[in-house]
Amino acid sequence: MREYELLIDGETLSRTERETVNDPSSNQPVSSIALANESDVTSAVEAAESAFERWRTVDTVSRGHYLRDIAAELRTRKTEIAQRHTEETGRSLLDSKRSVEYAAEYFEYYAGLTHRINGETIPLSHEEFDYTRREPLGVTGHIIPWNSPLLLGSRSIAPALACGNTVVAKPAQLAPMSILELGRAARDAGLPDGVLNVVSGSGSTAGEALVTNEKVQELTFTGSKTVGLHIRNLVSDRLIPLNLELGGKSPNIVFADADLEAAADGAVKLFSNAGQSCYAGTRLFIEDDIYDEFIDHVVSRIEAMDVKKDPNETEISALISPSAQSEVSSYVESAIEAGGSITTGGRIPFGEGNFYEPTLIENVPDDAAVSCEEIFGPVLTAFRFDSEQEVVERANDTEYGLYASVWTTDLNRANRITEHLEAGTVTVNNYASPIPQVPFPAYKQSGIGSEYATAALNHYTKIKNVRMTVDRTLR
Image 1 (cartoon, rainbow, N blue to C red):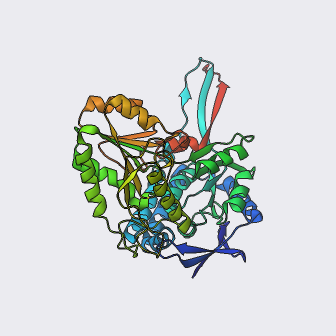
Image 2: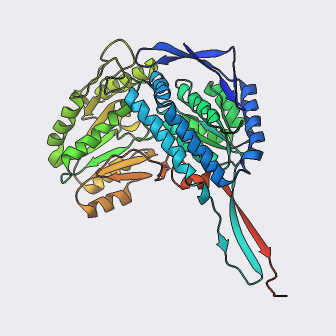
Image 3: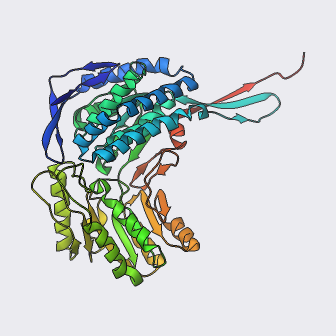
């Protein structure tokens, strides 16, 4: 098995306490990971704090060069890093190569924005001059999820570094390898020691130590609502910025006038990464006039999907763990108990690995667990609706508000619906993945803060106002 160590202040540090990472497609061990204790996290934060005093003074153009070099190093190592990503997440090698490319694009995007970290000049009286400046926060903490670790880690680490902050990253226990590979790539690309530190370990030990360390000036977390609220409570007396993305139960609304083929393609995008995505469109609302026809379109696409043991051949990747597979199975069983019917799927296809068939459930009540709770699996629920007002009310009847999609050729209707949907992102006639150039905000219990785009530059900096009296009299 491959062995991975902690990365602190540019050095790899071995630890006797270790944990095995298993390949979700086979549950066979693929690597041994060093587990950080509280002292290790403290050392990483101290290294980042020391490096911050130097890194913050690096001019913005040079910071951009560092980020471009990291992007280049990721591309140089694309095949190797993608292999590790596939081994820890169960995703196909092609999909993992895309993740490496997307990660590189995040570093390139924010490399091009370092010169945009500007203040403004505010006109006052003839005797006064006022301006603002944006300054880095200091040490930022990043707790990274397992479902797409390299991409989701890069989307916050890149802007944090671009703004002049230093980083301590804690990858997920189930999928730490690609973030440790990112740390290695950044170090080998020439990033100064201590600017990016990676401490693998458990949430209860390494994660808790990172959250409670008072030298950490910002925290970014992607994961469950329960853990996100716990983090917020732990730092409630410190008033530090938080970026929390905590899940979704996204509605996908199809009207009778929509391009049904395109809408059906969008509906089954849920099954990418086996539904293990926070913005997955898990609730499919179909206008009654086209319900049966549209269901046929969706079913034909689902049943054409292959589930195979080889992650490089399957269209539906494995779930991250046996417990995740069991949880998905329990949700499907609960849907049947609530009166729902399985149109297709609903089974564990074979004994090896954590696979689950892509599943469509109909006739389930709106208040059933499968309709309300984030499943994080390849399970789609379909519902009929009759009117705009009805579907908007039902779509909004959830504690989450991360993402929504509307399919219609009526531009007026599209504008009406998007205005009333309670979601941070609403797409019309597509179900697009988030990209660096546009913000990805969250409504309601889906989180606080906004990563991506220039919004991240505001999040990872603090504003200082300077107001001075000046003598403009010519001598």
